[in-house]
Image 1 (cartoon, protein in one colour):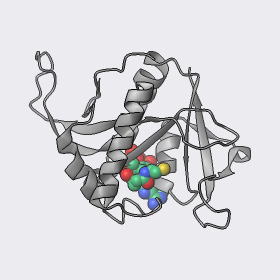
Image 2 (image 1 turned 90 degrees about the horizontal axis):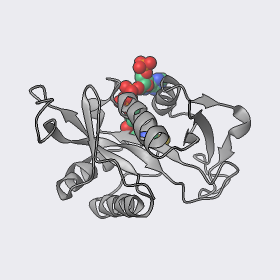
Image 3 (image 1 turned 180 degrees about the vertical axis):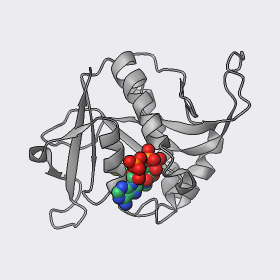
Length: 195
Ligand SMILES: CC(C)(COP(=O)(O)OP(=O)(O)OC[C@H]1O[C@@H](n2cnc3c(N)ncnc32)[C@H](O)[C@@H]1OP(=O)(O)O)[C@@H](O)C(=O)NCCC(=O)NCCS
């Protein structure tokens, strides 16, 4: 297992490991019905904390996982010994190994979730582009990363497209952890190969 990167810095963001204080903003985000419109359901505090526990366990097991996304503050010190100053957690973006079996597994997936106050500014795409380039392809040397969502999640699909990921309709699948007649079962799959 490769040693995890310490952090990822982009023009506007710092992606960093999880801290205890991230759990409250994470829970607020996960309780928002708009955030969870295309996910199974909003989460209560206990469920959100359990998700953070699973994310931290994923990091320990694989040496990669979803990063906490924070905004760089305007007055950051690029050459400072402590690195750029950042604001509170605004969401998460990062790599995951799916826990189910499908025609495209085993694989590495990229996922994202941001607080709606920060939507529509290209931040998910900026964070994901850095995760793909620096974490997935350069650091871990993965040959391919996939992303998937329900067909109606146009914001998420648009992020995939802006990243340069491509969809082949033959890859579309029914999510194996959902009942076949669940309206959320059909998923579209996008792929990106290492360049
Ligand atoms: C998906 C998500 C992370 C995108 O975050 P974001 O920072 O707003 O993403 P970006 O700004 O980088 O890009 C979003 C793109 O989707 C477009 N978009 C948003 N809503 C859309 C809609 N209903 N229909 C079509 N396009 C839409 C935006 O216009 C933008 O494209 P553009 O730059 O070409 O204008 C955010 O919407 C989110 O957290 N959603 C809830 C959680 C979720 O569904 N996660 C994905 C699970 S698979």
